[in-house]
Length: 215
Image 1 (cartoon, helix red, strand yellow):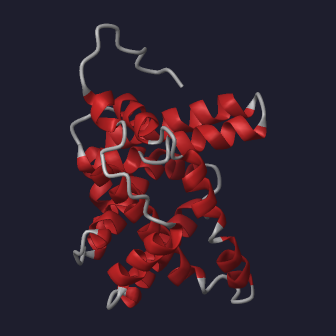
Image 2: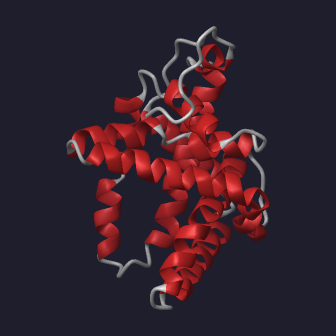
């Protein structure tokens, strides 16, 4: 395992480098995402149901788009819909993470935040391993985030100032901030994956595997 810990500044610098020459395309990508979500949710009741059912697939496509960028590629805008090729698994991943996070919310806010951090890498993992199930993606994410939750939380906090500034642009600035944010998160995942965090141990067979839906 590489003991070198990539700093928040370095992760953001890597994200900016990945986005070099692609800011316009990624802003257009986010505009399309916003437009689709707004159009679907504009339909009372039915739109909300469709939005929930499709949110897993759209999230998988979004995470995949920025993971490709973090790896130096130029993904097509159609990558947004790539998650529909793994629709059922993506839906179950969205459903399970929502249920588990909600259950922790019934206890306190802080446990729910910790839970969200534990499940944060699940979409990236499923994108890299489309053959695994939702519960396995969650389990691997939990293993990957051992000892990394505070690091990710502080990385989230480092973007708060930018999100506040976007309020003064009537939200237009989000078209560029979200690509910066998601590209940074993709580089965070890449850092964990390449460092070989406890994930490798978690993948190994164990005599008594944990329950598939534990949280």
